[in-house]
Length: 406
Image (cartoon, rainbow, N blue to C red; front, side, top):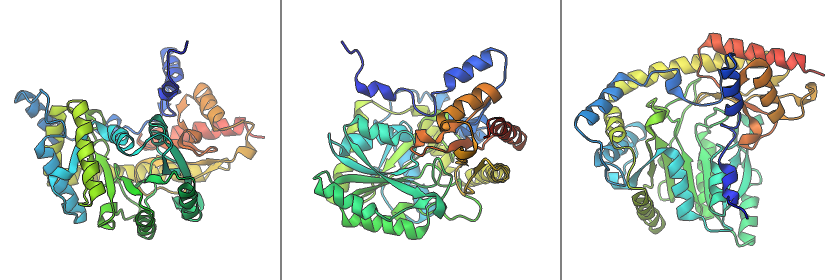
């Protein structure tokens, strides 16, 4: 008798699968350089004004269940933030507070996907997108970000794939983009965004934009929220406090469904219903995030300092990687990831999974395999550590490649 459904196979994803080995190495007395998890507070202390707001919420005994859809103060702060940054107007009722973007993704698939339905996901994708879709019985139409085109969306063939989906009577329910991107660290061009909006409109797909890294942009890139150009088109924004407010452990995310058409109104109502199933998100954290979003001056200073430091570290690491003859990377312009392509022909290594496993065992450097993001032959490096650690780690990766070169 089977005691676990097939859904259980998603319990360990690409970001976590080597943690057991890493912990074993650490217990043996060796140090591991961890560059596998995008966790800013590990390197940048959560700003004091946010910590103070959390403590204040605790002192005021704001520790019980909140409104299931989120406290009004936070929904107001989210609405004000999007108006301030992107000139977008929507009332706080369009916002549902979630336990990180992770829960928002579950809500998305729960409300839109029935068994056999399809959705457009671009490779390389954030690791949670595919298992969440499949968990609800959905199937991915896998398209590509083009590495040759600075990891912008490769629109060639996308429309054909959507038409094929319609012929199969499995019309794609939604199309999701990540901007800025995890794992590639790039920002989508405005022209590409406009074409994606048009395709979504023409084929009746819900357009979903994961914008969790929206203020972590550098190297001259310009980020545009999808809501700025999708007026009148049913769409959804996923965002939260983890990255730009440097507070991953707070687990505060939000889903915005800003339009007034029938489908948008139905989705917004369903998001509220789903939130009520699990009672509420972290209450004191909601008050802390609301205070953080309202404290515009302090936030701007904190995020500017963090982004400047991240840009320096990413650019430094990218230069070292592109000096290697075993790997190369498109220079990132957002988030804090680098997604190098390995020259597997030069290595006596079977694939990127073996590369990652043996690198950890031999060099005590933990990165993530590209195949976990749907793009074999790559690795993802989190460039949050200081430059001296990045230099040591990339030096070990280079030594590993030389030792296993053909």
